[in-house]
Image (tube, rainbow, N blue to C red; front, side, top):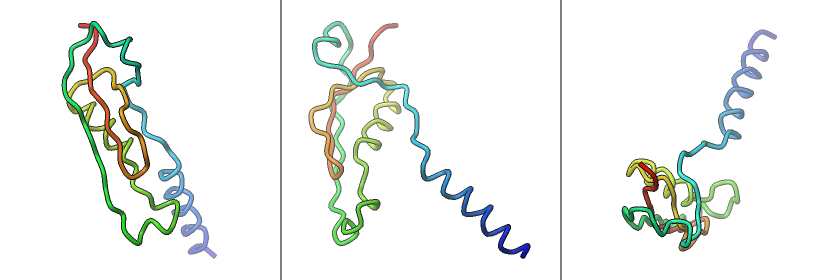
Length: 97
């Protein structure tokens, strides 16, 4: 009985981590909103998931990868060019001080 309790506790902990969406400091913007900002770089991510893509929960989250790379470049805003589960691209900008 004790094993079942530990197994349920572990599953609850593991599933709660999967459901949490990461928070980013980078905001999405339109081009006209970043006119006075400094352009940093164009970031793109893509992947060929192959047979793994059969299951809808196992898709490649390109948007997440682009946002993480934009944060690594200290960008404050991104302007999305393309945003699909298998590929995304955005222009990164630094606005403000």
